Length: 456
Image (cartoon, rainbow, N blue to C red; front, side, top):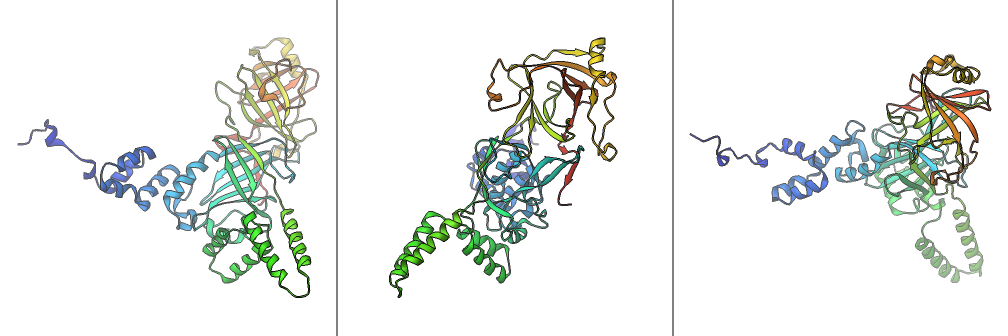
């Protein structure tokens, strides 16, 4: 009779498990751990190199609840490539803000939200409404996907008018490649919290772009149309232009009629015209890391509020390294952020408040939307001091220069108040003014509030 306490009698190897159980266990490991496991035996190597089993399982476990894994690249790419791509792209999900001054295009959004699609990742520009309500508009800005031949593709939607892809991204790609409103782009990541978007001037001249069209289209006419676009598109790389110019030079030298110089000048003129068709200047974006409040930092995050001109504005509130609070207004397409207030040592008071503080609050009006009855998730007007849970003093000052404030303009000087409401929102105002700007959440539990899709 076998002794159950004898380790030799009770040994059970990992290879004794069914293959689907092994794959499930491996999907919980990191890539370095999987690489170490692959070094243990030939069978381990075979199991770890199985794209349709291991790499699909890894992708499905990590992103299966957010996107449709088997639809990426029209189902024709390797899951190892998909895993590598989505690992880099998943950090994009969330809010990003433009950094620096807007480029020559004048179409750079100040605030972007990236979201998962069925077989793509989309970045949408988020802008405040212009009708005096709390609604925010949402329109396409950047499309990211993988073509059926495994090429990573990015397209800028400058007009924000492209419909959301239906079906797989590869079939949608054959149409967007020929859309004049979409601009091929490159996205360069500079760490986890910074990326640069620049126009891909060589897209239409590269052989890969032609392969994209061929692999994503079964129509001969589409390929012929794409060739015409390539011939009339933006200038290609320097080697391409150099070879083209050499060919034109020697061809024109032997052509009759002595028109070689004129033909060469015409060619140079066309090249300059193509170079002048740049539609987008490189722009930098930074991740909004803390876009929602926390129990320790109840004011931080992205907010929206109606100001004295009855326009909706976006605000970004941060806690600095010395315990102060910074509030910046985010412009739509403005050249810089406007610093609304900054206080280095906020003094907090809890209810019940003094008669003086009650008078300061009650003597001020609250800006309300023009059509409050039409608002989604609308909240009752903050009309009584009983709605206030805490009051903090604002003592804006520029005596201490912080690196995060460099380049900001419009610092308010003077004393003010921050009124924290019991529903988790807050309002602010200055004693020299007679109004309070009440702020609401832009995002809550990962969901964009009061959004209106411009394509609907």
